Image (cartoon, rainbow, N blue to C red; front, side, top):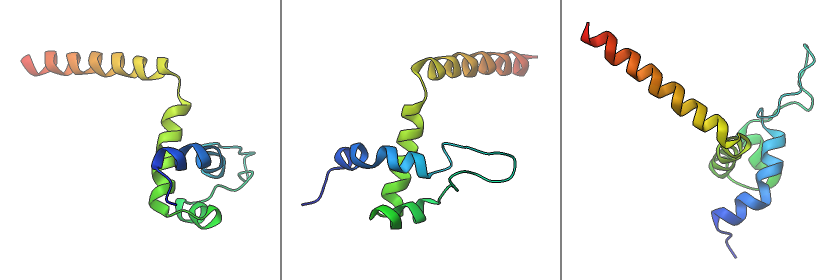
Amino acid sequence: MKLTFAELYRRHRDTVFQLSLAIQNYDGKTYTPPPLSDKAIAEKIGLTAEEVREIRCLAEADALPASVWAEADVFKNERAKKFRRAEKI
């Protein structure tokens, strides 16, 4: 039985997130544990690299609080206003 992407995501999100470079434990010399590529994670947990990539990208986005997205939106809008004003000069 093939799982839906939502089921794959729920099942593998934490593992993919922990094995990727999304969580960085760096002591100045090495990462602990060493981060794996999407392909290496896929081989380790039995998925395709594409599935791992999609899971990782969503997990990284889910890890950010909503306030970060809102602040980024405000920042981008302010920058766009400055550029529009500068173009009028």
